[in-house]
Image (tube, rainbow, N blue to C red; front, side, top):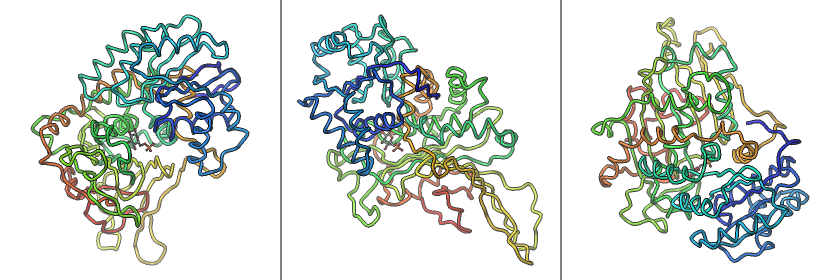
Amino acid sequence: METMTAHRNPCTYVIFGATGNLSRIKLMPALYQLEAADQLSPGTRILALGRRPWNRRQCIDQMRDWITEKLKGTPDARVLDALSDRLDYFQGDLDDDGMYDRLRERLRGDSHYATNTVFYMAISPNGFSQVVDRLGSAGLLRETDGWCRVVIEKPFGYDLESARALQRAIGAHLREEQIYRIDHYLGKGTVQNVLVFRFANTMMEPLWNRNYIDHIQITHSETLGVGGRAQFYEGTGAMRDMIQSHLLQLLTLVAMEPPVSMEAEALRDEKVKVLKSIRPIPHDEVHAHAFRAQYGQGNIGNDPVVGYLQEEGVPADSATETYAALKLYVDNWRWRGVPFYLRTGKRMAAHHSLVSICFRHPPQQFFRGTQAERMRQNWILLGIQPCECLRVEITVKEPGLEMRTRQTSLDASLRTIGDSVTDAYEELLLDVIDGDRSLFLRYDEVEQAWRVIEPVLRSWAGGRDDISAYAAGSWGPAGSRRLFEKEEHRWRHSLDPEPENPPRSG
Ligand code: BG6
């Protein structure tokens, strides 16, 4: 989590899958931001590894285009030049054993490459164990002259069993301290601010429990469809892609006990405890706890878009969910009985991530017979994106002679004008160099997260009978309301104060 510009060790960042989507939209732009912020030490080099027959010049040109695209045309030429100087290209096929020997010769035979090495797996998840195995056999994972760290993108496994198999496979070559299982949500500003908000403000702690909190919602919605990722998405679906990782991670931060310190192991111990406390979903209760759907055709803004089954590369009888919602209970002293509603969807009405904490009604109605008779509940809203903010919604009296109330919010936003804007990956890429694993997942966290959703995955593997549909550009199917414990519960879609009588849809 900390940065140490002046003393940071030089290292070689080898990016497997450097010509792919992740590299284009996240990694290269993040490296640009690190360069701009002068966070990369002079000897640090980036070796982009891909199958395409590029030379170094082509790779640099491509990287410059990607960054220009991401920054909407305004990169700083001086920064781009500096980043280009660090960048090399290495053409190779991951299935080719000889490639790993060539890679070793390149890294060891050229003194420009620092001996501290990061291998970043920006590749298809089914290649993780094979690439680590081959790197290991080629002797590239040995820490003889410097450290060697491997960053594994999500999903870590496809289910509990495959996660175990992957762990066994990479564990044969790597110590746990060398493995950085990334969940980029942990690098997002508000996500880290959840911890500060909770544990640096004493006024929060007495309220943060079942006595005052009615329920908690965690929403991630996006307007994008699967785009060119149908092949990846078909084997994944919303539950594995978002809930097993990002949303459950958010849940752990909201629900965890104060850790003894902010040090990696202390933090991760507490997160694991939360995951272990989640009540297992019995097989015959999946219907009451989980909901899935696929988007049909609709409009995003003014543009008509096709439904999921019409997307290129998606089979016409696909049972892959593009929307998933889950109700969970954390059975511990703090949270027993408080429902946590998680939901995510592609092609929804808006792109945002939001944690909404709904407080209980006051125990007694003081304003009977006045306009303020129907008191509203308080909410704490943690906006993760696009608006990074923290709002406390409370009820106040309207000025005037009558006793009328309205909702207002105390804004404790994370950003103020002039604060730097970074994406999650910058921080995480630096943490790998600094050896700080607090924002990366320990294996037991991953395993426990698979345990949580395993009953749902098993039940959903049975066919596509229970898949609902929703129009692209909507807030998802109204049927997801069946998960709500109380009739008055409804999805909170935005940071704006709720209308007096919100619609019951989606
Ligand atoms: C990724 C998922 O992990 O997170 C994508 O694989 C999803 O499907 C993305 O779109 C969302 O991340 P962000 O940072 O854009 O909210």
